[in-house]
Amino acid sequence: MVSTISGFSLILFIAAVASSISAAPSAALVGRKVFDVRSYGARGDGKTDNTMAFTKAWKDACQWKGLPRVYIPFGTFYLGAVAFTGPCKSRISFIIKGTLLAPKDPNAIKQDSWIIFRYVDYLTVSGGGILDGQGSYSWPLNNCRQTHNCRALPMNMGFQFVRFSRLTRIKSINSKMGHLNFFSVQHFDITRVNIKAPGDSPNTDGIKIGSSNHMKIHHVDIATGDDCIAILSGTFNLDINKVNCGPGHGISVGSLGKFKGEKSVQGLIVRNSIFNGTSNGVRIKTWPSPGEPNLVSNFLFKNLQMIDVQSPINIDQRYCPNPPCSFQSFSKIQIRDVKFQNIWGTSTAKEAVKLQCSKNVPCKNVQLFNINIVHRGRDGPATSVCENVGGWIGGKISPPSCIR
Ligand SMILES: *[C@@H]1O[C@H](CO)[C@@H](O)[C@H](O)[C@H]1NC(C)=O
Image 1 (spheres, rainbow, N blue to C red):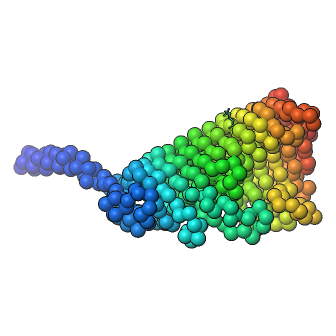
Image 2 (cartoon, rainbow, N blue to C red; image 1 turned 60 degrees about the horizontal axis):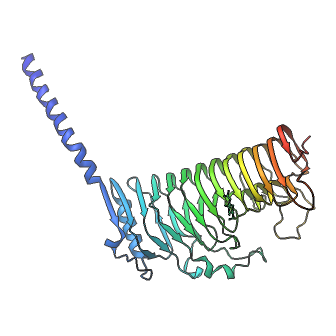
Image 3 (cartoon, protein in one colour; image 1 turned 135 degrees about the horizontal axis):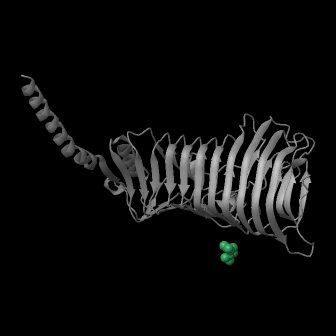
């Protein structure tokens, strides 16, 4: 009796193992599915409006349980404004092999970015393709250098409320305003991305990040007309490694202190990067406004080469891009625990190291370690400027530090 039961359950056990072996691989094969935009009517002729086709392909892929991939083959795909919205049923890939072409007219895009991914987790955007914003048609309309109330033009690609995701091997060119926009994004890797627009194209920030955390930007080349990377309110734990920046305005934190409800920016590393022909290297900028108190802290800028950079190290708490500004008030933003280590190269302006902090809340614990920036000009060697800054120095410091 006992042996019969155990013999019976052994057979059941073998049957269960056998069925799981045969079922597992076929389930995975069924799960993997390509959603080629051409099967939804898309055409890579540079003229056909592919907005509907892309939207339908995304919707089907997003509902697929398994491993869906939206696939855009080689070719030039004209695309209007799109929002690829989740949540999706599974991890999802968006593979761009060809070129996506934006409308020339910015009025055709009534959202903050031309291509938006929103409320998606476990997304991969990759494929080696190109996002062409066709910005040269709208740059002449940009009057943001003349007026504060200028109209915002769309950025090339935006990620909003996206988590555990990555963007890799994509090129963004000639955006109307900025190229890549991240808002409320968590655990996101940007790698092997190439960003390109002329150095004199207006407001073409490379990567703009706000209210986001746990992001990595590695092996990224940025040549553009505004900040290579702009880090805004509410961003923490951001690791920037091996970035080439230039032309452009450098890597900036801020501007901060202009709007209500801004959050702190904490935990930033910028390392092993090259700034070539940029107006700034690494910069923290806050308005001299009587705004709300805020904190900027725990930054490390390490192993950075500056090639003909106007202002390689720049803390600017009297940020005023369009003078005249009122300097009656002082920034209420506390900057503290900021380290600059192993930064070398050349500056085109005499004041190579600028640490101009707020009279209201002086900078605390700013550290300089092994700085060697050379300025060659009739106006003499490089200098440092300090205002309201406390901290310490170590290693060799040139130009001589003014921190005391
Ligand atoms: C810096 O930029 C100049 C001008 O574009 C270029 O010729 C040079 O090779 C660049 N240097 C480095 C080290 O990338």
